[in-house]
Length: 310
Image (tube, rainbow, N blue to C red; front, side, top):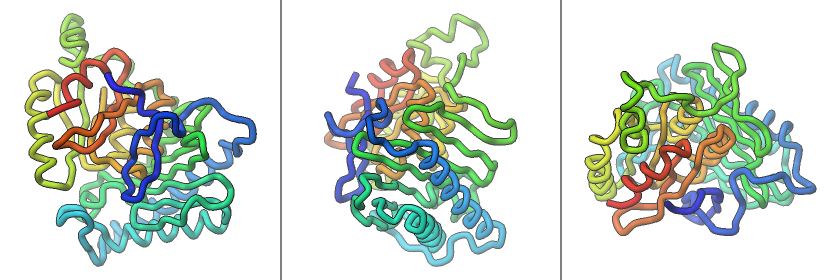
């Protein structure tokens, strides 16, 4: 089925790469670990602060500002991304000047001197943001040599905050107050028998994403063609961190995506893992970059078999 995706190693191009024997997403606390609660509090503060800045831009019609492309013409960065990352970096530098920083928009300060590094996506779902589609968020995580210690994902459009620590629960704070996350409790089915067809996939709502490169998208289309007749339905909303958070919250049954970067998944993978879901790697294929799959135990193997190759 593939190994558990329990490592996210920083490399030069920003890929969130699995690395056997390297720091796990969760894992047990080690002697000398930093205070997870305090780190989570700072992650939450940073995510909420940046989310507020972005929401203000969206309300006042200045959502994007100057827009440029990155890896491809469909991979965009805006003034809003840069302003959000700058605000987060300034906050973290003021509070924890010895920590490292890795941001999506090039804000890489190295490992720092404390043994901790912050992994930040200042605006996950940039294209949605620019088009006025309310499906975007801010993701802030912090890691040590053993993996991710704490992570927060804030959705300003719904005022929902998803968070977890390495040894604590996955939680959602929103309109319903504070609730613990544990994935979807049961399948939404018309009859009990259909819930078990195809290992439960027949009644499963699956989330995914598409890569920016057209040739990779063509390969992904082959995977989706194989999958679409085997599941209830597929959703593609364009914000990987929110896809992970929503899977932890049970709004999706499972999620997979290739070509994700460490800032896309650092917080979300921890939240899913602490919600009791399996977090697996999708090995790199000739036509497909490395990826991540998140699902409950009873779905993970069957879904992996369907999406692991072209």
